[in-house]
Length: 286
Image (cartoon, helix red, strand yellow):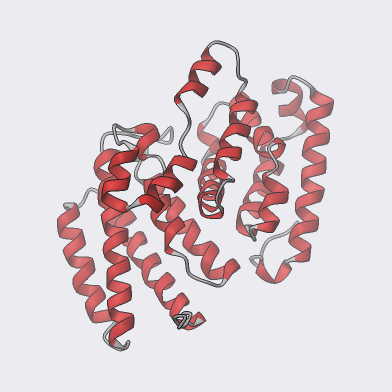
């Protein structure tokens, strides 16, 4: 007999509790050891789920242990790394995981733990000494598969250095890699969204290149299929702010084509968000 599917209330409960935990980890990073934070979270969680039936208590605490394990692993691997903004690197995977929770709560309306856990792990192999075999051993074959889809292949950087691959082509390969699985693609949207939100820390030419690359690889049309309206809203705001005529004239190789790419994307995003206005933040003005 097929197991009963979780109710929407069950999904929203799990997502709300996970969101609280990740926010707590983000705000508490560096203040105490991971072990102390983990003990505090588990103690609070056991109290918070007292009003649930036993099965749901077990399910949530099991999920929470998986999330904490992924966070601990990522925090240790990224411990000495910082982003261009100066923030500890772990803030990036935490943000991507929180964005995925937002997406599931407000846009998809259902819970799926795989992209949440993969979000925490997504840069470990690419940017640290972690290996795919480590991910498999600690988190299972599913997580290894998702992290593989989200990891640059070493030869891409070599090709780029030798002039055999442009930044735009590399961005396209990253997208093609991620699109192999809906869960890895969901993480890719969160990853790109955070990069767009923090794009002010890049020099202007790289800002223009990153946004144009995002538009050229087909993420806009794919975002509607994946119900990634939060991503589209942020992309729209970022385009308006950074792809000004002045910036394109200064930093794009083909100014007229870049302006067309921008204008077509703005119109496409407006049309998508209007079609799905019930899922969009009410204060968004397009």
